[in-house]
Image 1 (tube, rainbow, N blue to C red):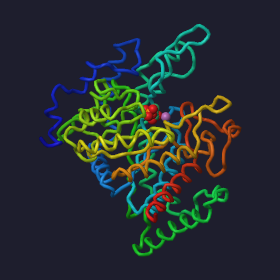
Image 2 (image 1 turned 45 degrees about the vertical axis):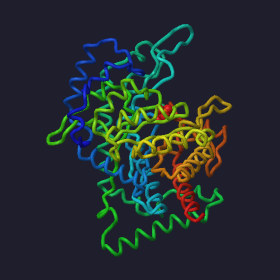
Image 3 (image 1 turned 90 degrees about the vertical axis):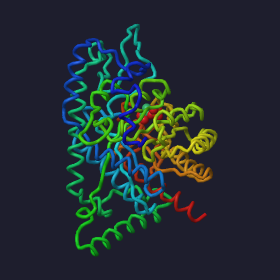
Image 4 (image 1 turned 90 degrees about the horizontal axis):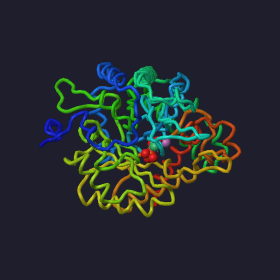
Length: 457
Ligand code: PEP
Ligand code: CO
């Protein structure tokens, strides 16, 4: 059986077959008829992505797995409807593109750019309800479902938010595509990047030289070609979000002309979160039947048997590019947990792409109660991930980050050595702490240094 006709023959699978499995993290909509009406509408609205883009990404992820590309996946922990705003979108895109240019130049590989946006509106929660002062209400599950205010009206899941989410995802995609098609001019001129922070780091000279070298390479290229880089190198950008709210994902799962199988056309790259990765659960059942490349978060509590069962369920044909395992262990746990998983997966011949999420295993609570992460832990987990994969004869194919293009103060450390007091100055995340513009760019430069040091050593 070829991977292409697999979906025609998948026994028992349909876009709604997940409903026969335990579905955790789903809201209880009070009005079933209203929900059905919205889902019917959603299933007919124009999709956000196309099947050929999805297929192209799958091929590029296969190249990353083979070591010819590096994946940069990043964006907010959770998008909010209010943040669907032009400056925020442009700044986030800008930092991702700048990071990718650093990585292309430093790693000498093409970079696959995947945003955590245009649909990252639903969040897994630790409890279904929240109690305050004797009052118990449904938990806030992200803007796609309800509102964060603690009132019965705000917390009631509202199906109309699914349509609003689709609309805002479409606006985000449209603006992103427009900016990229327009060339986003200053990207190609590192002299316009904001690099004031560089003076605060011990690697200042190395970083300045690297950024100058990127500028020089681009100018050399442009002189040779007689046109600007943006004219001959159309940047590609893909989107991703956690496939959490299954009724909405299923409503956007379609057949397309002349292509076998089913596609989730709300995003290029859906992933399964750590809390919804049960082998016999609804999320794995839904994802096994779609042609999109699938990511799955792998946490420290997951055994090798569990991971192998997931690989078998989601990629029985061992199709390159199909499955990405996104490990998120934490800097203190990765050395103990990752090697056994790498060996087990390789022994069964699954050609997975390994990505490192150095954010979710490194969350801590600061003295003032704010959720934060230390830049040093994030860097340490990435550094260890490169070394562990190399030591196991495997390859780290990319990173999965929570970041923003804004000057927020949510993660500790980095060039300006943000401390717990600084967190209060510009803490804007409603959920997880993100790297700010400077920390994100610094991380890209550090990744390049880690790889450079490994190549010399
Ligand atoms: C997330 O990516 O925001 C998230 C909730 O991650 P995880 O499923 O790895 O905990
Ligand atoms: Co998060």
